Amino acid sequence: MGWHNSNPTHTRISWVRLIPAAAICLALCSCGKKDSVLIVSEINMLGQRHDLFYEGDTLTRIIYSTFITRSETDTVAIDTLIRRDIDSVIYESDNSISLLRTFSRHGAYGKIHRKFRFNSDNLLTSVSRFSGKIEYTTDSVAYDYTAHKVYYFDLVNKLVEELEYDRDDNISTIIERKVIGSPAVPASGESPLPKMSAEPVQTTYNYFTSSRDPFLNQLDDDDLLFGCFHRSSVGLFWNGGLNPKFSSVNNVQAVKRTRNHIESNALFEYQMKDGLPTARYGGYGVVYYRYQKK
Image (cartoon, rainbow, N blue to C red; front, side, top):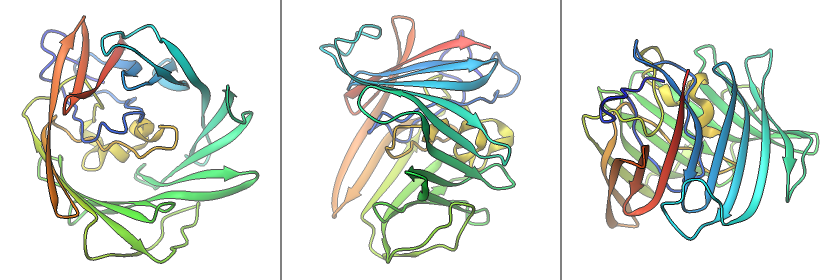
């Protein structure tokens, strides 16, 4: 990932979603010819922490921690540990990626619990989980290159998020709708778009700055238009079962959200604190990122 060390307000990253902030933010790709770094931990002071381990520049292990903290400024110590899970990342021969749960303080472990599948363009097509030996699809993704849109389907909750990209490869609008019926999506590949409600559940409008800061996901030029779904940045979906974050090229400056005809607004703040890049969404959820150079 590229990172200007002298000025942290001019690298390629953005944040479209911070809450829930348990989602992992990382990429294994470089950005241009700048110095590159790896994210080795993300600490959300709402109570989630993820530590990332690599062999070379390949992610091999993730430790998920849930904790109670008394401060938004403590980036190292955890006051009360509630849960800890450890996953090994397995890169399968069929180009899929699996997560093997190797340890859990409060759940089953010793088996693969999640799998990611990709198309010939290395773009994510489906996410599946396992119940015993039965694999079932929980999420599906469809791409419209002509209209610059992505449809992300949450098949468990029967919701679809329509992501519309602008000409700068930023996700300008996210329209959430209900899925009508129970579409059957095979785990092995893409499927036709299911029916969607005409009336949105929620509409989000993102407004971007010109900055590209080292707070979230780096997108390589070759991965755009749909970079945050590329196999090299699929870490966006290694999030313990919560919804993914969708990353754009530039940083989000402000968000306007309409839900049930009620409008709300939020601002994003980016700054360096104690030598670490931090981000804050609407005044809540300070997140710290630790990096290492490749």
